[in-house]
Length: 533
Length: 99
Image (tube, each protein chain N blue to C red):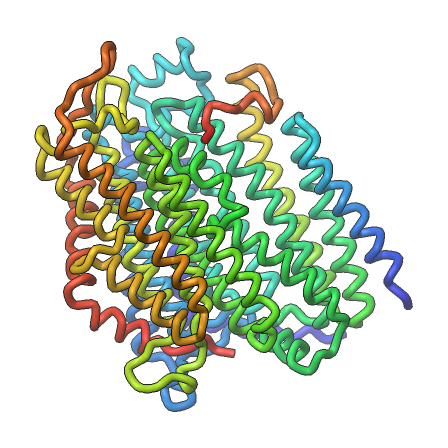
């Protein structure tokens, strides 16, 4: 048998390879550099790598091949396994922006008094002499930066994967570092470790479903490539039972990653238990990458089978919105409330997935499903990362104070920070003049134009419920007197270094600008065109 | 060659793994059941590769093995940490985060 050397288009792939390269370099730094110099080198390396990759993404995006009158642009590289097209590069861009925000939050040392918010020594047991020694010596784990870079690499590969196997490998490269990062909090370590275990167990379980689904779809189509699968679906070549069960099982894996009901159970536990910097990065990055992959799989590989998966997504979208909105109402912890609200946002995003896929089926001025979802992901990411960044600032003597009781009257004590948090919440609620409003408007109109009006009605009702729980937090901050329960204390805002401040300011600015002049980003998402087939 | 028997066997293995994850309480055993699910997928992939007469499925099986090995590294590290802290590897004991 002859083996031919695969061609690898380095010119298109280099932004992703930079990220992986920096991650490997980070591992070497960890091995060879003295401890006191690692923090600076690692954080600079990670930041520089991400900025270089972002610049690279823009450069690669500027000279993509245009196909079919601009309906799609890009090429399918590496023997058909990776699609470098408009949507993939748009997703790379926003993943990298939020990853830079993540590095800034990771590198914040002022809030904990000179050390990062990660465990000084993960191997030291909580509450032991070893842990106290690690913390008095000021130890910190700098491995978190390579782990973050590997996760970013996986996130970039996931929505660009054009073949089932690449998609599975990307899913794991994305997930495994995140499982570890979740367990590395400096404070409340039992919660953090528990979050890591729950995330890992459920994540491994769902990826088991994903790979078995892949095996069945491969059995149906006889190929791993999306184009071949689409061809097999259209010509009805194989055994339909294999296709249906395989499609269902792959959906389980992807819907778990995006946190859609009934696979959302891990979301609140992991968001609450993980270090808040990790939560911020994960809430934005994982959802973007997983939605990119979900869209590509459903539109490209199973596009001809739309009438099979659309009813399923209708039900899941409605269920996710209802579960997220209703359960968020009864929460008393800020991070948990934000987690349930992110579940509700998953439902809104799924509403967008149900819209019209082809630009040719639309009249002028209407937008496609893909464009709406890309825009919503951008607005969602900025608001989430900003909101979690604010949560890191609000502290009491035991570290971050996340229960609602501690937040009472925060708006009177620190009007600026509470005001910024309120702004992020209003954007998530979808109040006009914020980015969230435009995002919601976009996904609801695309779903309406495809005739999914029952889902849109459910979405609007859930948005109203969502406004209730967001406004409740605002009332708590501004209109309730700070009156701690006996034995309790009120949280105060700790002054952060420029790193966290920069993340919050960029989040606020982007949320405001996208709300007032959404045009350029909507155009950019439209300019990205369709997925390559 | 008829591959039905192999696919049925893989489905049975997958179901055993799945039921094990849902019913067993020891984190290590749960994790072994996840590995069983991955191996069931491998069997299905190889069987389908034989049916279709191409190598994609066999190559995929290798990738799944590598991923499973990586998952063991991460998973056992997390389970070890939990065990050292709590002196228990039961998934029921880790119940601080709820509702």
